[in-house]
Image 1 (cartoon, rainbow, N blue to C red):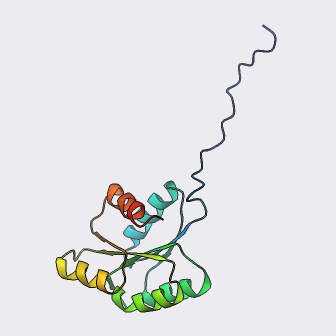
Image 2: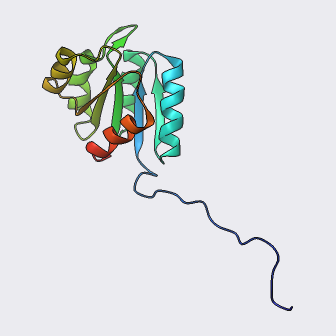
Image 3: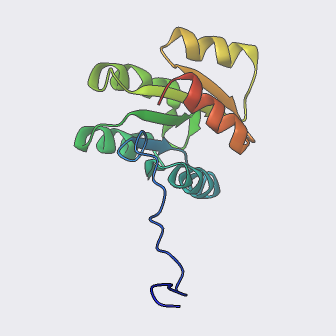
Length: 138
């Protein structure tokens, strides 16, 4: 049996080229949320960055461009709404997904009125994150 190899064929990893260069900033003070969300985003082919404070998020926004931002509503140094105008001015192309355990109509309405593109309540699921990214086309 000449010419027949018993070695398994090499298969390159499948990379989603549509998302492989997309950067996403996560601004959330809960380490578990950042870890969970960044792991999920990596699996989906994105490049995540985490910040735990508004000021830390602002510094990240000053140093690189992002395609999307997951922004928590309640942070130790303020509320996520306070950062919305800065994001809209500095990175107008970035899509903003507000995330919060406070998932009422008032929060959703305010988020939309102030420029957020989507709102995901906590606790979120893989499906709700995928749906958010799909809806805002990132």
